[in-house]
Image (cartoon, rainbow, N blue to C red; front, side, top):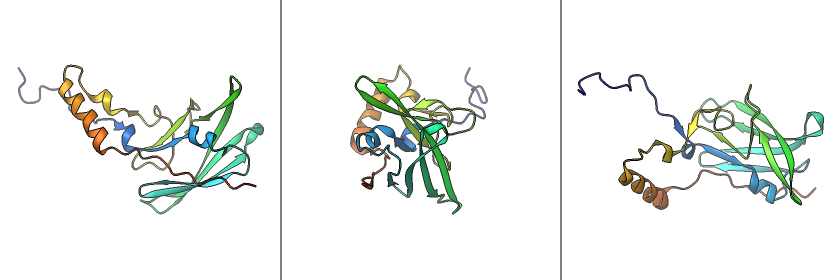
Length: 166
């Protein structure tokens, strides 16, 4: 039992972690009032940046348009992300529709994994969380992960430039 080749892991690749991706979270932008036609700014991540503009899209809805340069190929990449405003009590909650072909899922956070050009939802990029890769019977590994995140992990999120008042 347990001899050479007895495992089921042949050809298996671990899924990419959410914690390793560039994230695009909508809530801070909404709080800053950036979801109005004509708003512009810059997202900054370690090693890359993207300019954004909010423009009217088809059907009168708003679109978040990202423009960046792919650091691997040097190509200019442009991506339009449809935005949706949903009434939530007396306020409005902003959602993005996943811009990847064939999806269109409503999400509050989009991800760009290492090596990818475009942002998309967690399901489209087949992402998982680091905590999901721990075995339930190994509390020592879970404890080590929590300690390492508390000590060293810094989220790869953006720094938003205030929208132009005009």
